[in-house]
Amino acid sequence: MTKLISFDTSTNKTGYAIYIDGEYQESGVIDCSENKVSRTRINEMIALLYELIERENPQIVVMETTVVTRNIEAQRNLTYILGAIIGKCVEKKIAYDSLRPTEWRKGVKNNDEKLPRKREELKIWGKEKVFELYGKDVESDDVSDAILIGRAYCNLAINL
Picture 1 (spheres, rainbow, N blue to C red):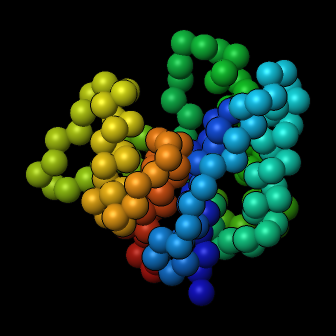
Picture 2 (cartoon, helix red, strand yellow):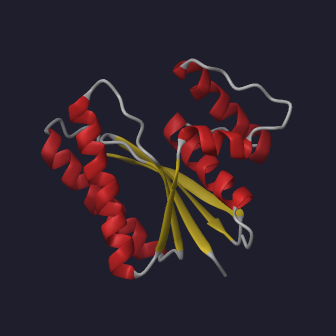
């Protein structure tokens, strides 16, 4: 049995999805948005991500690679979270990988499908794609992106 956890990380709300042997099992969101102090919110997010990784004990963790934004502080904070996840994976000897947004979207879209270009349209597309693939309405694009990141990785991996 191969268990994979995929993350769409954020400093406020991180979506996650769990796959077993390439089959979607469950998903959710880790919500730290109530905490308005950046440093303590990041620490809370990291602690909750560690709890999830410890509880689920995956063999593979897949994350979305950060995309450089105009907000350098948000970029830096997101990098802290990604680094913490990688550190936990190294500590527990869990394989990890990352996919750029263009990679995972290409990994789940239909061959004849044209992706939207605007951020808000991509959020809607992600939710619609999850419904198309799994018949599941998701509460947020954090969750739909995490589901699709995991699906793309499974589609791209040979033995999942």
